[in-house]
Length: 469
Image 1 (cartoon, one colour):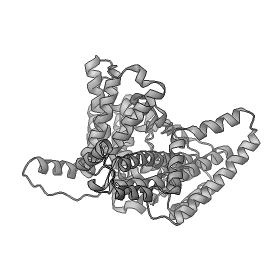
Image 2 (cartoon, helix red, strand yellow):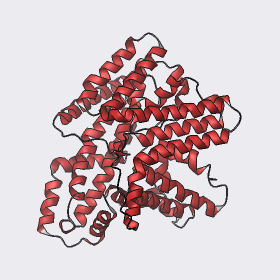
Image 3 (cartoon, one colour):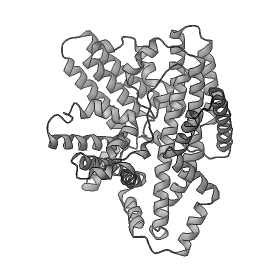
Image 4 (cartoon, helix red, strand yellow):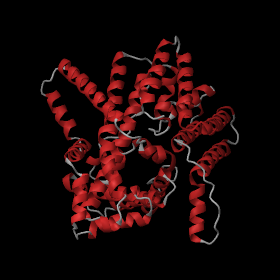
């Protein structure tokens, strides 16, 4: 089950919300949300429900050890981290390691064929962060297993984030208020995310998929750059749309999740880009890997090394493929070059900085999207050497970029750069009344939801990109 499916929109969500509102106490409501979350997860991969519960049990047990015992605390957090990474490594990376060994040697080891559990990267990181935080401050833990189960399994952010840290929501699990204002803001946020997915991400994604499926002889620089730009737009609106829907759903049940995106394509440096892109993941790696490695406290060379380790881990976290690893190292390279001032500061400010950053991001996402390194090489070759324009390629370009697709691509670019948002903010500051603003927001959200539902009715199944991570 996914947020953009009819079953979720018209059955699961209304039933879950109605049941939540009818229950008399917060403890019953929390139990209802936990049950609903487990049902939600089971729709996708029922056999892996046991894996999710085992993960929660492991982290609860080690968290309890750290709260009750004063001895062997370092051993406890080490074992907890190892257990979490073992689960993640077995189910996500074992076949990748075996295939890599087979490619480098003549071992011919058989692959396991394990199906990737949905959301394992997200709930594993949440569990790890909980145990590490309890190690640092035992009073931040919980002795109630149901509380931890709700925290890790809560369906809005279970399978594709944002990564929520326990101490950010612990008080909300114990005590929260559901106000009309919070409910309305949650509905608006959910609808905006739904519209991002259905109208923008899916539309530009069709173009990207078509371009990346072309053979080398069918590509030229126009098609290659079109595909790269479209995928850059697709992954942003797909993932930020999911985050908007998760944040909105959280508000419907009284939770306030932290933001996960802040117009990353307006960044003027790679450092700034990672402050705006997938904020919950970059914050997780900063707090639980970069700083424990020493951060920037152990000299310039160690700082650069720590950055490369973090970006290597970031790429590997996204998937068991060398394209993801190299994508992470690509960003690590430019982050290091910026930190060492190899890239002049004047190129990291204003319009020059935004152009430079977007070029790095687009090229990185081209590598990220490619199925193999060879496929990435074909795309890069076409982008920078494909200047022999063939009539057949022109016809392909015209068929992909019709009037509707061109309009939606332009809309995606404008919204990704925050231009319409800034325009609306200017109107509000120039005397647009709260009543007019509220009415316009209500009409706009209603229209957006209707158009998105109609688009959903005529569309084929298109899951969120980050489900695979």
